Length: 507
Ligand code: GLU
Image 1 (tube, rainbow, N blue to C red):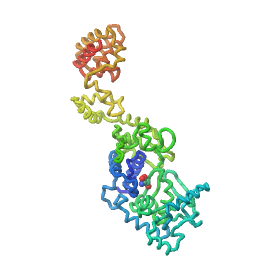
Image 2 (cartoon, rainbow, N blue to C red):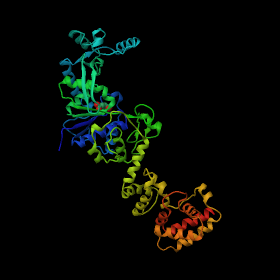
Image 3 (tube, rainbow, N blue to C red):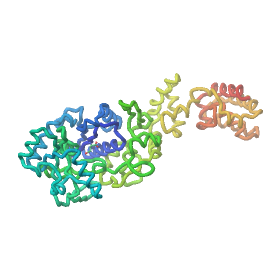
Image 4 (spheres, rainbow, N blue to C red):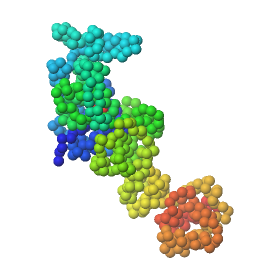
């Protein structure tokens, strides 16, 4: 069932998508799916000076990895397209003309030198220069609101450069509503007459964004807080066009883990965690930035973590699949205040998802790694290994370090642990142990444990005297899961071989 909820994610392709952008996309996606609506991807590429060629593909790849695909966008052929603003230039022209004709927009000829001089003059008086009715009334501005029609025409004919500005209403308290922040009001006298069309004829973000949201029938604009200052102009543009405005929801900023301010692209490198979903290679500089995917995060852990940066379900529950997030997501539960990014919590989510994954799924991820290492083994054996080491793992890459001894015998022994635990009498004790092991018929974990422990008890020596050297022999260090599980897994012959090897090397 199609509903009339239509939302859009509208990134500018100026570089890789930062996790803040991914969160905006995610909230839009969740909201759309919750309301059986449509999720649109629109590429806002009108600013050619900041355009980065591989950024659009990066955005598309990132959404795909995140499992939050768009319903309409650059690669879909839908009636609301094209979805790249650079392919919609003709459309904007028509709408600028409408605003000029209705008196909501005007030509402005002030050069950047003149505007700079005004700014400096104001600064020297401790004031801020504003391009609006205030300075117009003082005769400081050169635009079609103060010039005669003939003068304007002459300037245009003479090829003078101009921009088109929005005529902000004077003396009005503009009332607005934000789905997250509630009622917001602003005095229009504090607003500049923003540029809608640049001197090269290209629309600015404001104009293209509002025209497209209208033409694409966007019902809810869900975007980052950094766009809140643009909301008054956007609301006024809807009024100027006599269009119904969509509902607005401005998401809280994602803040640095320590200190103040927004989490920036540079924070990740500085603090040692990725700020991008996927690895990114800057084509100009060749610099490579880390990505969550390549760092080994499960996408469901990444998404769960992101969802909680600014939203919570109002209960203690923290683990939510994408389906569950769709069910529970509500703009009313998005917070107004910034959300501090916490790299430890991100790891925590990853660890939780590691435990939630089935042994079979994890085995399928581990098998190629084992193959690369030249290990030939049974799938069912790997599955058992996983069940024994999983709780100590955070990433798939941890598996080998935690389980190598299940597949190969140790090539070296931890020097410190050997020195402390391999005593002069250990060699003969281990030789005796080999005999005990040889006599065990049922090589299950429980049975070998009973036999070996009974033997130790009968010998009236401390458990550590046997257990530590035994662990060293089998693992190479004093780590790993329950020793008798390891013994049962590698089998009698291999257990004995490893003990013999250790006797040779350590005695
Ligand atoms: N192009 C803007 C950006 O890069 C979109 C802002 C909006 O969603 O209106 O984030």
